[in-house]
Image (cartoon, rainbow, N blue to C red; front, side, top):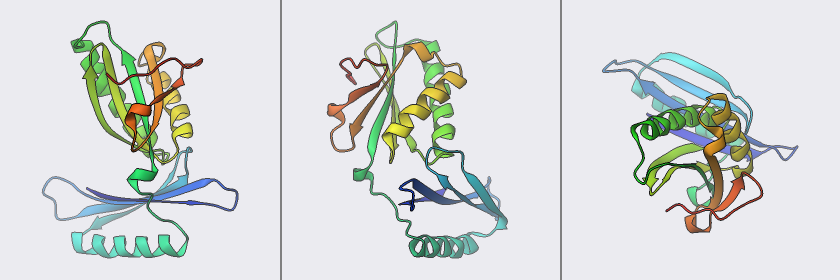
Length: 189
């Protein structure tokens, strides 16, 4: 599934986003073309075009990009975004079966919650000694931290055992704790 994400600052200095993707289902010739848009940090609005062939999707992507450019939207390069690290303290060095379940559920919950609000994408997760790290790439890290807290609390995923840190894209080792406060040292390993 190809996806294009674009952003712009509006006249109120709020970050807006538009994204489009084309999705086909299990060996079907037709798929759907989806445009999702809104203010970053708020639930987006979605428009869909059903029963679209791949060739038509290419035309729709071209039109989407042209409209975005006309309206001042552009993709934000990866290196201009930030990391948001969701971290859970674990009771064992390698993690338990329950911790792997937590990784799966937290990753699923964060993926949907952040994407529908233009706040970023879950890029990876891993286990370090006594820690579970979930890495999110975000164009708006402060808003993403607030959304992570809401998402994890709403999903009932051990909110009290979670820490969240942020770091520039090109310096993950410079991660700083953003939740809970007061800040303590934050390490990925």
